[in-house]
Length: 421
Image 1 (tube, rainbow, N blue to C red):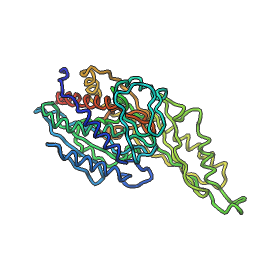
Image 2: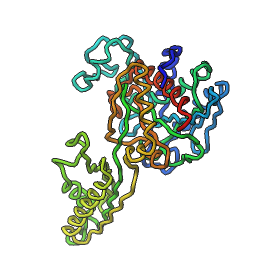
Image 3: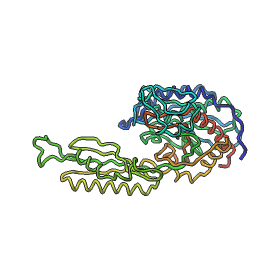
Image 4: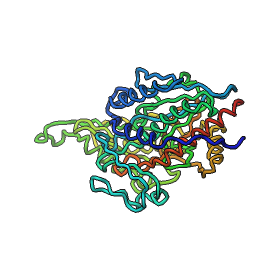
């Protein structure tokens, strides 16, 4: 493997400008929508990206009927280098407001807590990585909304990378596929993707935190919906007749583990059962849950726990009917990456060539790469400067975003040499 070639610098001001433009577009995913994409802003942002990509010489681009944006840049080498896909998602989490984002830029961060325009703070005690970011440029929201760095940091990096590669045809790379997906945050990111259309040997999602991190494992994930059907009648004549589904749903959640097997009590490789929502009324209520484990087999154990508890609630509530539905969401990224070790090895080599630290990591969550890998496209996840994701005190680091773009350039160069893979 040859040493890294010195590449021209990434235009950081242009990268920042892109990021600030993209975060101002409300792309909050809507889990209650049956449409795809689930929110109109995702299609709007896709249209903006398509227009910008159309201005890049030699890059073919289209936004399909589902709002996905597909781009392709031809190789600059004559060898049979394999096509590589780079992927980011347009949507942001529905867990916090994403409308009316007003980003603030902090140049040459001097350390200490960050005060937000709304009066809130990003405290070093809760984000100790700030101690490693002194002297860098940070971006936050005003504290009343998400920033949207998850994953508009990845989106901005890929958009800058597409422009940069076209401006520097002297940089060796094989065919590069760019894909911007929708609804990753609600588990639908790959729902409309045909891996055959992507036509790549391997892929990388740019959807990770910090810098120098290579995500090679994710949770395996299932979802559970428990429907409790009771009997509704006017409270005045309810004695001996009413069967309250709301009360039964509350009972169900209360009987699930609380001292263990929850997001708030687990870490590392520990899995959990997570009740996320209770909806409905006296006559009918539903409890939505997610099940997560690095061990795919443990998901069936969690499902059986839920069925057992639901049966106990039904037995203790005469007249109540209970239905438990389990559906698969995604599987551990590691299971598919074993089929092509080079996809991880070359990413590590690119960090070494740039004389940067790299660590393999596990993700207590999932990525589009989890599902793409299961579909046959090995796709680990790369860091791109996101921090405190899904929270009002989210922030991004421009220097880490630049570093992610530089890493991508070197990674593509290495793949250009890997014509046997």
